Length: 120
Image 1: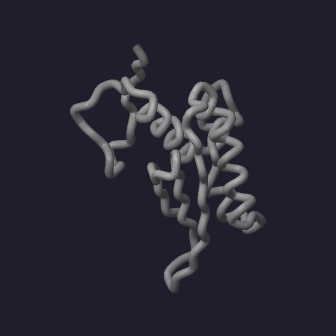
Image 2: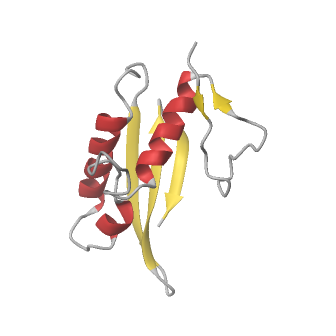
């Protein structure tokens, strides 16, 4: 039986304070995706390439939406997807501009179901 430590951020809207472990494939995959998205490169000891590095990529001003989605998909393919071939992951990136700030909305879909949304 599959089991992993439940390590979702307490600030996350889907956080469950009573849960200690993850014991289903889909939940484990979603946690791996979240960890990859919200980690900067060099933050993980032993693997300097782990992490989508999203904030640095967004604010570098050299990538468009499709290039950013490609970078994210590359990280997910390397660190999340192996072993989960029955799940199709799709990344959608939309840049936005308001009076207060510019940023990006990143949505991750698994089998056409939105599972992660992040606003940067």
